[in-house]
Image (cartoon, rainbow, N blue to C red; front, side, top):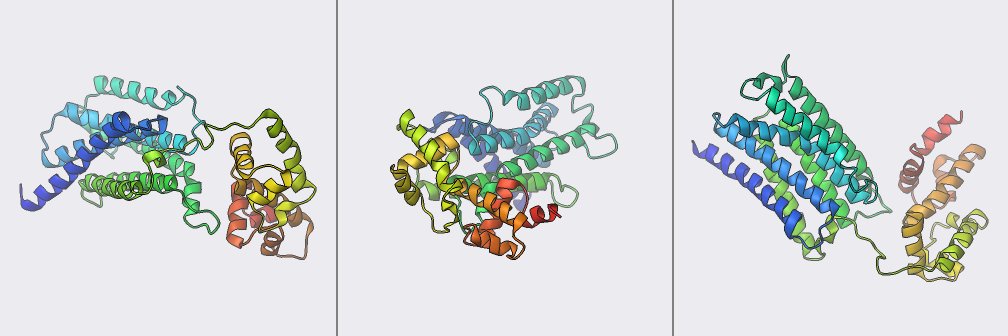
Length: 352
């Protein structure tokens, strides 16, 4: 093996080894383990198995067909585990305790049956991207579909990177890094005709080290709780009387008094009007309404903007956004798209 090949083998294998180590760390060692970290561990494990298979197959063509079969099975699970991690990390209650199994069990059963009926050493051509490559195209379709679903799950985290009103959290940065890294691995493995096959392994090594760098620098300021969302008010409760009082009075401030039209409105201002504490109102919005203060206020602003878009023929779309309490056109368009699934211009056009 030449020196250049030795370097490729070393760094690729090191990336796979580190991935396996991290998967064990997140699954068994980290203190604040939860469902999100377990799925992250599973994701790192299946990618590492897939990369290990690629490394050995590239440098040692006579690698056991059973090992290759295991690597291909792991590849089928990369997309589902990425999707499950991003969904649970962004919306912890969106998947029931055992509901995630519907994404995993059918694939495992399919791959076991496939391995028995169509072993790789006899039916290797089924995994190629040729005329008979049915399994190869099935893998491409499944991986791509789940990758797109995962990107859709974290779309708001990506949006924060370009937002002037919302700053990405540490969790946002971490999730974006994971998704982008998995996309690069997918891209490398699916451009085999244009790049070296080993690029897939190298891309994982690269993205793994980027992940470790983010982890290291973030850990100097934060605990590893950023790997998954935490419950903000788990040790505090709001009395039923207080919650009912807020639920009764809060909508009146926006429906009748239109407080949301004030672009400088703050959580403290609303709390004072309700004669309650700032953290109590914040907890009510997060735990009961399921929204942050900014998202809650923007919802009313968007509703007011929709009314003006239908009735006002003088102001421009940007002027309407300003009248409804948005400080910039970017924040107006972002909030409108988030709440209504379309831009203000698209909504106005739909009225014609």
